[in-house]
Amino acid sequence: DTTVKQNPRYKLARVGKPVNLICSQTMNHDTMYWYQKKPNQAPKLLLFYYDKILNREADTFEKFQSSRPNNSFCSLYIGSAGLEYSAMYLCASSRTGGDAEQFFGPGTRLTVL
Amino acid sequence: QQKVQQSPESLIVPEGGMASLNCTSSDRNVDYFWWYRQHSGKSPKMLMSIFSNGEKEEGRFTVHLNKASLHTSLHIRDSQPSDSALYLCAATGGYKVVFGSGTRLLVSP
Image (cartoon, rainbow over all chains, first blue to last red):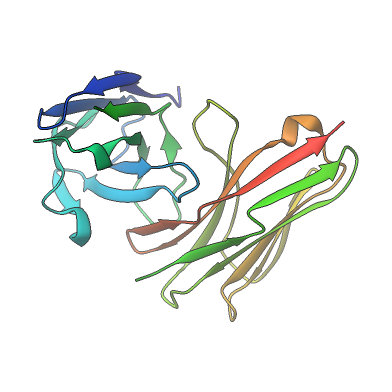
């Protein structure tokens, strides 16, 4: 099974409210990633977990949090949503190494009003 | 900041024709190049990867890599309407993964 699951598929949030997105995979992959994708833009890597080690990109460091309670699950947390957070959020997983294929989930479309 | 540039932004080819997509990285530390395909409403799925100079062919799909210029290209021969999708190029070096903004391909019947 090469499925990566994401919940919810659609999320409506109010400005200033928190948002929590969930991702799961059953491939026993060491690495899990979160990307933000806006229309006509490249998927932007926000952060990734290698095992239990969290790596956050410098320019999004303070905007996004994450947790990985076990190998299968990974969350993305926004403490206070702003209008600019409206986007598709893609979760992916892979085994260790730069030569490893990433498997993507279906995404969560977040709309902040 | 590392960038991955893809061209063209969009492409229309007739059914049965050849589609050629380009991708260039600005980072000399890149080791691997990937092509992902994303159909409308679906998640990206890896189409092809290339790690060393030269050419790799899988069915109707051929990918080229020139590591000196950090340029890769994807060629689809005998294009089918089902090939219509967003094609994303990604470059990885270590744990760093950078995607391009994609080429939207439309194959017209």
